[in-house]
Image (cartoon, rainbow, N blue to C red):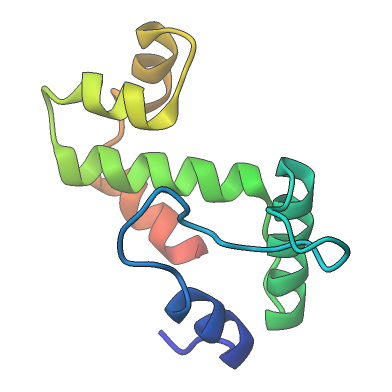
Length: 109
């Protein structure tokens, strides 16, 4: 899928390993961006790319893709990755994810 050059450059600049997956820095002090700062930056990149996007949509898409790749029986891994407050929340959202749902989501993104 073709990517906006700015978005592609941002993705390619991500570290392969380490604790800091998205090393976005504040323009004011050079320190790491706050949660809101990251949200605003991702929304800015999406807007520049002409894509309607929210952090919730990114999170949900991530959860659905991971659920599909992990397959059945790996809910504890997904629960930890999604950092839900309870396993029940993870199960409510992702236990019924099936191929038809993934296809529908793939057509939206």
